[in-house]
Every structure is written in C-alpha cells, then in structure tokens.
Length: 262
Image (tube, rainbow, N blue to C red; front, side, top):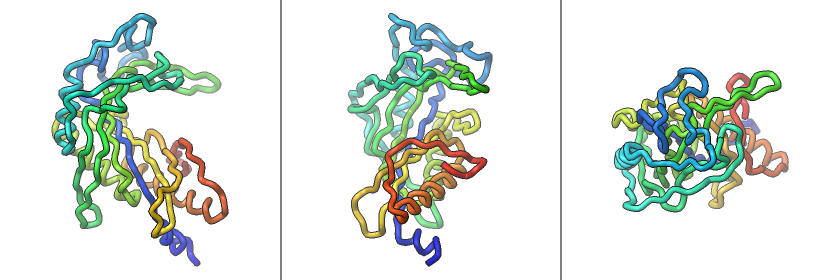
C-alpha cells in the first residue's frame, strides 16, 4: 500500500490562529510608536518595558479598528469585553504576563467565505480578540538579545473553528483574511515584517471518526506557502507516528523551512 493510499484513510483537522498587528501609530496601552524598524529598544517606555507601578491606558483607536475588522469578518460585536492577564514567562515578555482577552472577547461567532479548488468554502471564526504583542528575541552564539520595540504593539487574534481540511485550504483562508484586513486598512499584512503571523493547530483522525485527535500547535509562520508545507509535513508526521503505534503528544513546534520539517 502506497503512502498516499495510507494518508487517504486519515482526515486532517486544522484550526488557525492569525495574529494581525493593527495599523495604529501608538501601542495598545502606551504612546510608544509602532512603526517597524529603527534602533533596537528605541520605541520603549516604562509601560512597554513592564516597570513596576506603571499602568496601561487603552488606545481607543485599537478598539475601533478591532470592531471594524470584526464587522468585516461577519462577527458579533460584544457591547462589553474584558481584558485579562495571560501569565507566561518568556524573556521577550517583560511583565511576565500578556494583557489579552479570553472569556469576553471583542468579537465572536463570525465567518468568511472564499474559493478553494474552484469550490466555495465557508470557515467559521470562533473569536477575534485584542491583545498586546511581545518583544523579539535574537539568538547570537550563546547569547540572547532582546528588542522590546514590538512589545505592546496592538494585535487582533482571529481564531478559526477546526474546520479546515488541508494545507492548501489553510493557506487560502489565511490569504483571504489578509486581503480583508488590508482592504479595510486595519492591518498592512506585511508578512516579511511579521505584521501578520499564523499559528496552526493540526491533528489527524481515521476517516469516519468524530472525536478530535490530539492537536499539535505550529507557531509563528509568516508565509502562505510555509503554512501549506508545515501542515502537510505535520499531518504526515502524525499519521506515520500513529501507524507505528506512537502516541501523539500535545505540544508546540516550530517550522524549519530549510529542512521542511516541524
């Protein structure tokens, strides 16, 4: 039996989390500039650096652009939404937590439609919530350098339902999201600069099975072709593991585009 025949007996389940930097001149909770580039740590205030005693002040334009994007994504706009602390300890997150939304997001229950392989597809959007971006870590030799210029840049995280079934469909969905956000001028969609990035949640299950398999998250992909290739590789990796009697672990992986592997 060929590998393609074996793969045809499985179904890939994909959900995407797209992080879009909103097109504002200042950050979500401070007056620091958001423009790309410049000297390292040049767009950083005490708020962005997470100094004790600093208080965030919400940028009204971020909320306006979030609502605008939510409407373009056919979402319900909640009249009341709440920010919360998402605690995790990465060096590029100076406060030790991210200000995000969870239980009551700004936008939820939306959808988009697009054409894939000459067929009209509809993918539901579970939520689109506001949050702040983290900084950037740069690894050089045995050292890690931190640039906090990106820390606090406003993000809209758009979370799809697990309704996508292939890497090419996922890439087309992400491309359509980018087209919509660029059309309404909410995000410049510059993939090379990281203005739009994607996390891919991938699981597989035998055809006919209704229960979802264990998902693996592939983080921070900034290319539509890489989205497709990463999902295809990860799907094949999980199928091979299942056929070899291995257990799929729920974990976070990165995609190495040079080696085409996660």
